[in-house]
Length: 226
Image (cartoon, rainbow, N blue to C red):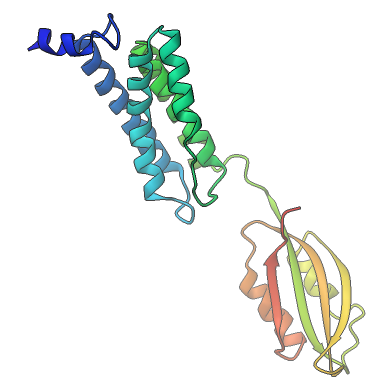
């Protein structure tokens, strides 16, 4: 049986045997599972994608097999490059960290494709442990968050310094960016840029503001990235 498969594969690469191909595929599959588990454990629920996890599972196997079949044949490598050049990948933009996981997967697949199984396993293990530590330890998180605050007030309320005591209590710093009239001039809308500590109790903050502004509309939102 081994000879039969070897005869089929002889045109692909003289170095490929059924045994080496199976070892490469299974090693790549194991590393793919490891990368997928790391992705599952470290990704936020809001941006986690099952399709991405399945892709991470498949990619090392596919890439290792491609490398295995291409081998050192230059003509075959150019043919493969031409084939891949017509492929277009279309997907909705996701977490930027997904790009890192794609390259993580590619490196694991390449390691298996060239037969460096131990180094591939070591690479995935070390980087995986590092990612889990960073994620679970909440490293590199911002201590403060930039937000915009819009407060609607009645026209008879003097807006100058009206909320300063509350803003000093709940924010690191703040600045009044814009004032405009609304509702045919019967109301004012104050637009603040505020810096708040991560984890600050926003409900208490808004409750104190709405008591001061007569329970009119208040909007607190994360500032758009520039």
